[in-house]
Image (cartoon, rainbow over all chains, first blue to last red; front, side, top):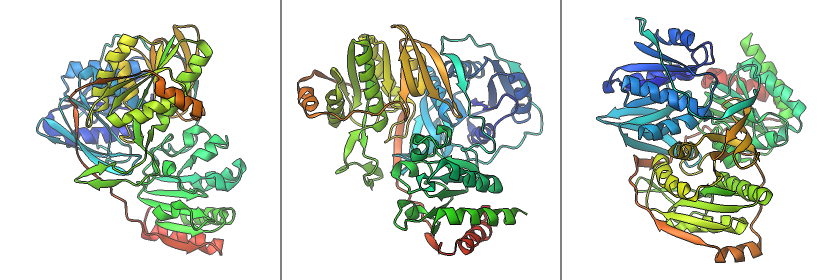
Length: 313
Length: 248
């Protein structure tokens, strides 16, 4: 049996959940697939999930803490007899899946690009060494693995509807959330975006990000920032791409006035296409760029916005 | 109070990696205290400076990790325990071995790095917390103690951040913005040589095996467009992305 932990936003399944279902189907030789929806409003979300899976557990445990999530996933794994647990990748899931793997005495394959079953083993391919090395890992069942976002085709509904079952979870001691400082993001989520437009220190001021936002909006893209930019307080930390920020792998990554330090590259070097605009022809970013424009970002960016808008009209 | 930092030694991010026999060969590569672990070490020292008590650095890894352990001692940690292990040991198995030592030390809290710069793993902190049946706060940017049994911490989520109250003991992992680590001073380095460093050999089997490592530098088009005429450059770029790459 395989268990998929289905990421959602309290209303609907997130894209990551549909990728995780696809991953579970790819190793379907290991058995039937069940799902679990953890958090709030889980019955409604589980109904949606039942279009994809024959059995979906709904674990109504309230808002997120890693202890609750690990305990609920563990309860679902116990109940279904799952030897493999699949979840989508992200900071939160990579926290609670580590707890879960320890509970299950399982091998943990983090942030995998692809996964396959080999007898009673799971083989996963992932990046390491700040995203510079591709490695193949192997672990004997039981295994917990997370799927890196944007690596897997989204699952299609199964055709017949599954059953939803409430799952009782005894709540473990956990942290108490005192305050949520949510960044009410308008637009596209950075890790799920197929196009990312990132601004660097070279833009010169926080005001110059209005142009970055305008280009992003014209392209249906998410806005990213470099460490220097978030450290300067120009943009929220949530927009940071790099080792200590987010790792993205969009179809196209547009780096505006970004020099391209190794730590930044760790967060974006696997993008399908990389575009760089920088006035310094020697900037390291050009070495990994598919298309590079050597020029003043303050002149190129407005022209890019115009061109992008014309394209969409 | 007692504060423990769990650290590792990793290659300097700027160094060139090479592959030998299907595995990363770190021969000749500059090795450093993992930057995210360095934040953990700094925070542990600050907590000790503020609240008193003792600071301990704990490492699990190769003999050469001693250099990173000495760096932590030179920064100001009181004493060190180095569990010496050969070869790859996955973070879940590491947590099991480390938890045994931590249980015996019975600290107020444990701090470690948010992500490891060699294995790109985020699992050690939370797995350690599970092994100890403690809560975990990952990607911590701020921590304040409220007595010996309670802390208040700010940490990053997938989107945004939150402030949590957490009962101690607990495990925290570091995030950028937590602090600015101090440099070891010369007297600090001299003193570090005389500080207690206990080495304990451990043997454990890994739950995960690394079959093969490769460096796949994606070949890039490296097509340069002259930006002297910004309008023409922008149009050409949008055309290439739309018609050639077909990504917008």
